[in-house]
Length: 294
Image 1 (cartoon, one colour):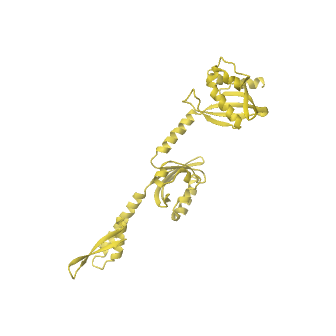
Image 2 (spheres, helix red, strand yellow):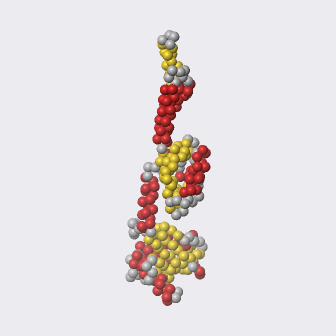
């Protein structure tokens, strides 16, 4: 190692160590060649000389107890020839790190430790929000494919995450609204947010529910939230039908009413399967009761 590089390495503000590994009989061993000053400060081992020491010798040194966990994780990564691992060290449970190993020629390697505590906490907060939000929530990629969904999808629509991840947003759209939904999505690519729109979406039990969607785009991901408004839509539809029915019924006054149509409307409006109809017989002056099945 050149003197300039050695100085840069040792004075790095990051936790770094340089080593050389060897693999024999499916076992990995390495020698620690040099470390940054930051590593010794981080693990509080400034007074201990650890350069040019083998892995096994380091593990036997009780003064390096805080460093042992990191060394074991390094050994595990090198044995599997993996470059990256997210770790939480025993002696600092409140912190998270990424451990990155750069493999160099002649079996040399550099291990760097990056503090990702703040990013991890943000991710943790997002995950908690994601799980607790009472509406349907999902993350889509730039091709409208489900990447992640929250637990409410199973509660409201019957789908587990594994049922949706990999499917496109359009696969569950009602056939009558597929084209309109696709056009909306294509136009949305040039916007940051898509205004509220309501479509019918197929649930696990093959029924269609009305979902009111709002979608926000950030970089190459789409964050979408939906509220089940099926009851509201059906209630409004019934009110419209009731107003129409009342108007039609009013127009039949003085004429012979279409009993069949009236009964069909009554069954639909009341969401019933059968009803009783009392028909007045003018000749006998009495009512005749009819039992009607929907």
